[in-house]
Every structure is written in structure tokens, then in C-alpha cells.
Image: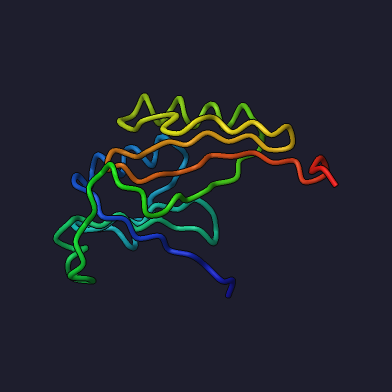
Length: 134
């Protein structure tokens, strides 16, 4: 079995969050989805668990941070610059916020940051490892 990551995120509106993640390229896994949580799949090894606030509180008593806070930025690699731009445009058109930080342009790497409807931060990026300066 491959090593996998399940990113757990508290969300205010489960349906809205599921629609947002589907719009930017995630696929729902109905086996791990109910009215309190949804499993959204990015790849064979990367899954995002969207949890209602009530469900989240069954895992921890720690407070849910304000939407404007940044504790972590999750990065997703994409095939090219156009895919990075498309993800940000799609995020903005589906309840998220595009370009919450300055665009990162390094020649060999290009990235744009977006926030989901709850303010969780994602970095969509493309990188050409062969072009990394020596």
C-alpha cells in the first residue's frame, strides 16, 4: 500500500466546499462521505477530508482559527503554467479567492496562491526541475 496523506479541514458549509473542490479538480469518494464529512481525492495518495465544524470538534477541542489566519499552506503541483492560472481562475469563480499572496515567478517555477471558501490556503504551482539553476 502506498503512503498516503489525508488533509483534514474544518468547513462551514460542507456542500459548498465539496462543490468548490470538485470545481478545481478534486473527485469525491462517496465511501468516506456523509452529511458530516466528505473525502475529496486529488490523486491516489492525496485526499482532503472536509469536516463540518461539529465533526471537527469530535477530533479536537482546539479552536478553529479565523478564516483570515494562515497556519499552513498546502501546495499542489500542476502540469504547466496554464493549469496554475486555470486553477486560480476556477477557484475565484467558485467561491474561493485567487492570488491571496503575490504571484511567484522564478523562471523554473511558477505559483499562485488561492483560498477556499473557508480561507484554507492552497498554492497551485508548476516547476521544471531540469531548469533549476545550479
